[in-house]
Length: 200
Length: 246
Image (cartoon, rainbow over all chains, first blue to last red; front, side, top):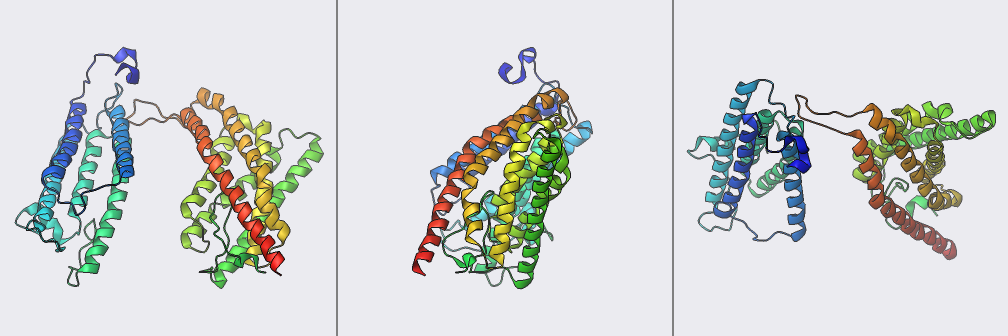
């Protein structure tokens, strides 16, 4: 990485364990996504326009490069509250990832019997799915939680920016989904909000 | 022949603008407000124009005229931010994004370049874009005023869709030269730049940012320019046909 950070920093590794932790968490998140795409998600249309792929790849890889630049920089400053902050963030990260996974499995189960019709998702025995009481798209809620925890873990403004953009995009998707649910089901639980309980 | 009622699409962009569509124009209150807004803006840019002329006559040279119109320029150019609100509220049928982009680029040049880097204020390139903006805005705002009142003189419509051919490149040249002139001072003073390390793990280099802004003119300017040329052909030839059919 000499061409990125300059000659003085070759072959040194970071003195901060949080940097490696961030790398592991970031990779874990995307590996989990890939596994879910192969084994969990059921797609109504098995296609995606080519232009979307270019756009999406540019977005994800570009942002990942930008975030990685700051986190792996020799002058990276670890979080202000030290280990406490990092530990809290890691726990929040794992909980949100577990939540996100639970929701994906629950949604996938709705379509399990090859039924072509939409069904209202309800909470199951898994506590993570109890967010369905309050929210139409808890998978997005958990995802935002994941990224917030990543921001706390790295205490890095570009990560915060990425989280904000994710939040905005997912809120748009959640509102859309919520409207679709309301349109299709007359008996849809009225107290549910799209993405944030009671608020949004 | 009501100019505002003519057919054809009126896509908006900065040196272009908005027109009231027949399908859902603003209500009476909104129209009244918009007329007042556009009259005030026309007057404001006229003040700037007069200020420039007076300063030129008083000084005898066209150098460093910026200082004599600095305040009205900042006030009225910043006031254009309201136009984004007009689009967002729907009282003007233009794209919020496009309008925001145009107004923000003007405001950026006024405040983040010309105001912030004092050393460029005496450059001639500043006069170049100020003159271009002044003439453009006077015509543009009077165009809107007359359109809203359904009484658009052909001269204004012609001017609006013709003078840009010279004014737009003139303005862009002035803007680019000004940003270019600001570069060494930004590099030297580290203006608006944050460097590592800091506890938020963020860095921003204003110098590089300005260079990227300059580069962005390359794809954007031709698109807007040719769009305006296309609009010109559509609007002015449509008027010809109307005239012939009367």
